[in-house]
Image (cartoon, rainbow over all chains, first blue to last red; front, side, top):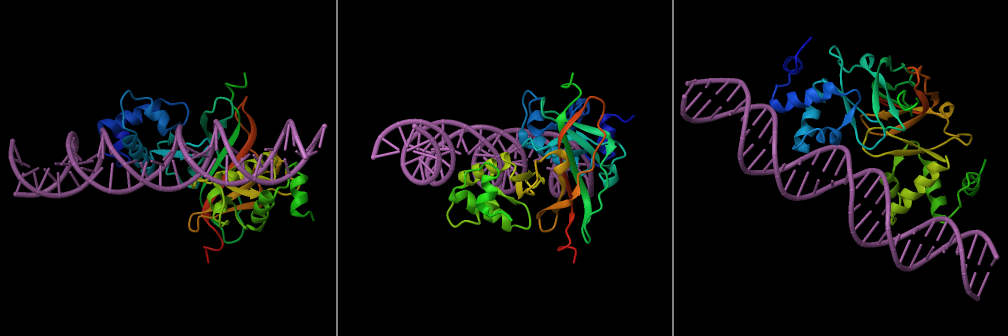
Length: 136
Length: 136
DNA sequence: AAAGTTTATGCAACTGAATTGCAAATTAAT
DNA sequence: ATTAATTTGCAATTCAGTTGCATAAACTTT
């Protein structure tokens, strides 16, 4: 089990205090969070720094982004082995009631047979409905 | 084959001049278009009116919206029979080169078996890659 | 360890999509 | 024709995402 610092360095991200803090917060989350969600976890913080931190993390494949249609892109940690290749991708779930977005990490994105001459790089699949919590 | 007017009235949308114009433009498109794309098809137009027109069309299930991650929501005509139920939904394709978004109307969204107590209402699935045009 | 170089952070400011309120205009109903 | 309801156009706002630039912090090289 890697510590925060190692997780950063193993993805070629320089482990600054800020980045460790952000990674720790992301690690605690049970759901994907947006930039402004993240911002609110700090008493005092600069949105732009957090923005760039997330960009860096995403670029280095430490986290992935999810477009759930809520207006704000959300972010969640990747698995340690993740390279964000098509085979690494999973389905996301957006709860229409609590508005939370979850990684369904165990559900791979089904492969699609595209029309002739179309090639695929990536897929964003978001199922919308009511989550287990809200369905009780 | 319904004319523009009938298409509107059959979806319970009052056929104003503006709406007929917008529907005609949408009908001509081979790909999904955003609000600002639509705005640019007019010499003089009001974005808000177009915005509300699209909202009305979507509400009445004449068109559907696609969140392709480009920053702007895109819209495309529904099939005549479409009720935007899960079984009516299809996969969308976003070309990373030309930035166009296509309806893969013949490719239904694969059904997913969700975790216990999760219920589904809707799914947004966008495959990203290079389209046939750009792959030549 | 000091000087220089690269990288990260913080602040101000901007862009563009989405949205609301309200008044004028158009359409439908009596 | 008058009234009522709906649609349209304009002004203005909100919020996510982004850029430029100056300062600060972290690495490099001597």
